[in-house]
Figure 1 (cartoon, rainbow, N blue to C red):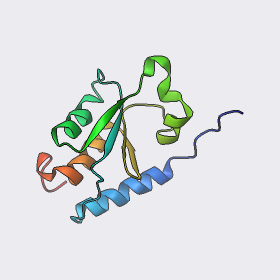
Figure 2 (figure 1 turned 90 degrees about the vertical axis):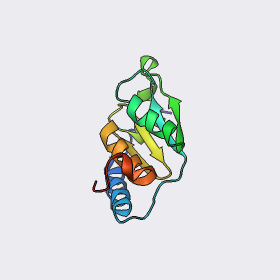
Figure 3 (figure 1 turned 90 degrees about the horizontal axis):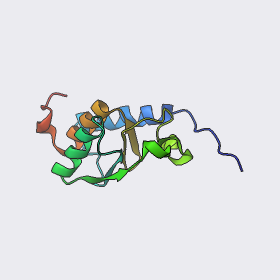
Length: 117
């Protein structure tokens, strides 16, 4: 059986904007069970990883890019670009550390980024 290409990520973008809109309106959307996929040595992974550890809202799962794990069908289904970090919070899946941090701040610690984001 051959691996199928992941579907376009437009649904993730729509989920992201819906989540940000809900967070902006003051409605918490986080599950408290955030998972950050990446390598802890990565400068892009460290900020969201430290945020979830400091705010006790999730954990990190090592994703070894040296062995190609980021290109596995399971990870490409989460992030078709095959990059890290990847964040999953329930049905919300995001990539790009800055977008992840903004989402985490809105859901778990709004004062960490300022109240007007």
